[in-house]
Structures are given as structure tokens and as C-alpha cells.
Image (cartoon, rainbow, N blue to C red):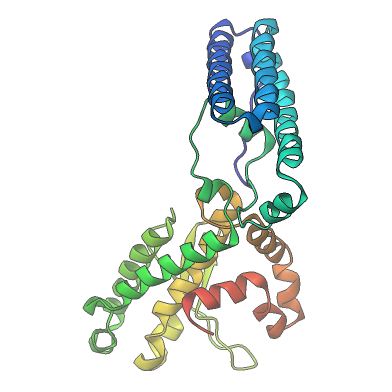
Length: 308
């Protein structure tokens, strides 16, 4: 599950110092809204409706700050103001811009805000600056981020330390070390915090002749590689384990994005697909190999690793 903001009523009830700090922030927010409204009023008469709305909001924020007796009440009231503010501004925008502009605006690939309501409110109260590319990632931003990471991985692949020539010349122990080194470099590109060594398991081919060469364990945050495959298959085959590492790291990235959506440049739509895919993962595996391959997380991992 993703980490969410939580607060305890018992801990914050009647907290004078915290309440005073909130009041100051709310007052500063009111001042900033006044300043924006004044600028809009002086720059264009057409913004009169927006100016009026902002002035009203400014007054409400200030009044609510004075009325609150506890931090909990302050947060609850500001939530209401925040939501009505968004709806009010959108309503004025519709009135001023007209239907055609609204339709065009709706088509802009801005992404969906991935924060929970309470996270939005806390950021609003604390004037926290957020990277919108991560907080509300669009599909275009997601694609650009993936492309950038894939290009960085390609540059790592070109290093002599990971060349096929060096792989063929290396012994079993050296190849294990090479894979670990490579994994940590690629994990850095993806912004992952996982276990820095690889777990090696021993598993032969199944009854249909297929062999599992690698996997990712989200519970342990570990990449796992089949040492049976590494030991017993030709070097020209096992050289592909570098690609397997990228594939499994992409699974780690998928899990990380689901758990911490605002830390990764992944759209809400993609996060929803990945979450559903992991929810039905075991069920689809039991149905057969093709069902497993067609899972969204598997198709994405193969694409990212260049395996399709």
C-alpha cells in the first residue's frame, strides 16, 4: 500500500503551538490570494469575476483561521474551503472562457493528481512546492521519463565492464559479481531503494522445458537470478541475464510507483493498470504461460528491457 498522511486526534487536540502555526500559514495564504487578486484586477477588466471569487475566498480563509479552536477543526474547515475554491474557480473559468476553450483545455495532457485529498490539503496549508511532473504525471511525461531511463541504461550497457567479450571470458563467480554491479547501476537510474546484492536460487527446467531465469521479490526487495541457468547454459545465452536484471528491476519500479505514486513519473492510469495486474498475477499464472505473458506488468517489463 502507498504511504498516506495520517494524524491522530489525540495527539493534535488542543495543541496550541501547532494551531498558532496553522493560523499564521492560513493568514499568509490569505495575503497571497489578495495579492494575486489585486494583480489580476489591475491587469485585465475581464478577470473581474475571478477577482471577486478570490477576494471572497481570501476572506473566508482568514475568518476560518480565527474561528478554529483546534488543529483538527482547522484542517477540516480548510478542506471544505479548498474543495469549494477549486469548483468555484472552474465555474468562473467556464463562464469566461466558453465551451470551446473548456473542450480544448480538457484535452491538454496534464495528468491526474495522484495525491489523496488530505495530502493535497497538507501541501496547500504548508505551501509545499511539488513537482507537478510527478504529482500529476501525464502519459506524455511518463513516456518521456521511460525514454530517458532507457537511454541511460543503454549507456551503461556500452561500458566495457558489461561487454559480451568480458562476459564470455569471465568465470562463474566473476559473472555473479558483474550482475550485482550492473544491477546497482541500473537501480540507481530507476531511483530504486532495494537490496544491493542478488539472491541466487537453483531451479531446473519445468515439464515443458521452460526455465525461470529471474524474478523480483517485493517483500524482500531483492532481485533473484537462477544460478542453475547461469552455471549450465552457454555464455551466449547467459549474457542475456543483464536484460533479465533490467526486466526484474522494472517490476521493482512498478511496485515502487504503486506504493509511492508522487515519487515516480508514472501516470495514475498506468498505476491503476499495474496494481490490477499484480492483484490477479497468481491467478493468471495458474491459467497458463500466455496469460502470464499478457499481464500488463509483464508486457511493460519486457518493453522496458527490450525483450519484445
